[in-house]
Image (cartoon, rainbow, N blue to C red; front, top):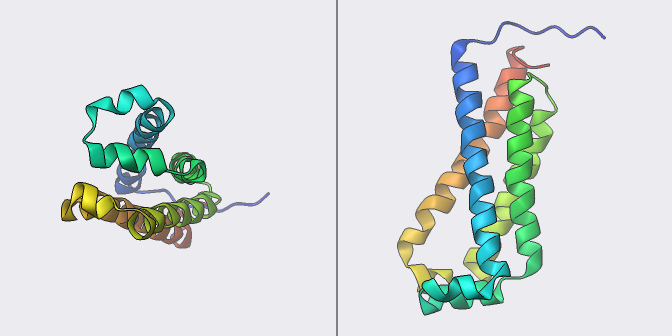
Amino acid sequence: MNESTNKAPTIFWIVSTVALLWNLMGCFQFFAEYSFWKNPESRDVLPEAMRGLYELMPPWLYIVFALAVLSGVLGCIGLLMRKSWCIALFYISLIAVLVQNVYLYLMTDIMKALGPSTYIMPSVVILFAIFLLYYSKSAKSKGWIA
């Protein structure tokens, strides 16, 4: 196997490490959200509108959420290992993030429950997922990953 890679610059390692930490925070968020969904008693602390959202959340949405964060974490590990298969995982993560948010914003009353500020974090997540996909593709074209 003849793989040719260039020495990755320091910024590559910084971006890859920050991206991994970001996606690990996504895993934490997944487990927090899932515990609210799985344990109705834990929802008592939430406002009524939010409780209603959790009660109506379909199980497949949590599978999509898990897929988004798991593929993001594995993609970042692949990026740190300088493996080009991370690109496929970032595609999967981006698609899962988009599916999750399309459902939340088009099929639920999340805007009614949380107001317009609810767009901020999902927008950041989507932009970060897009960034990671393009960053990994750029790293491959520069020979930083093989």
